Image 1 (cartoon, rainbow, N blue to C red):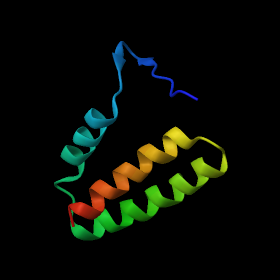
Image 2 (cartoon, rainbow, N blue to C red):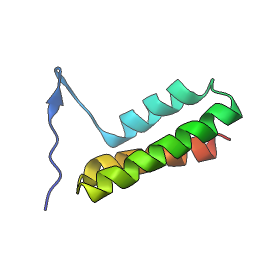
Image 3 (cartoon, rainbow, N blue to C red):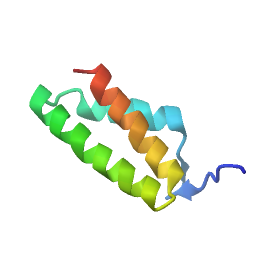
Length: 71
């Protein structure tokens, strides 16, 4: 199996760029907002895994890890 990398509106998403951009987007949030966002992303990650969308689930897992590091 090989991951599919598709062009999105003329750009290609890569894991590290998405993590850095997400980290930049959430650095201004308060601790309570980060906790709520982490809970929401966890629910979305579980749903994505149930729907066999493992690439999305992995992306959400990485975003949750970024949130937990920034607390």
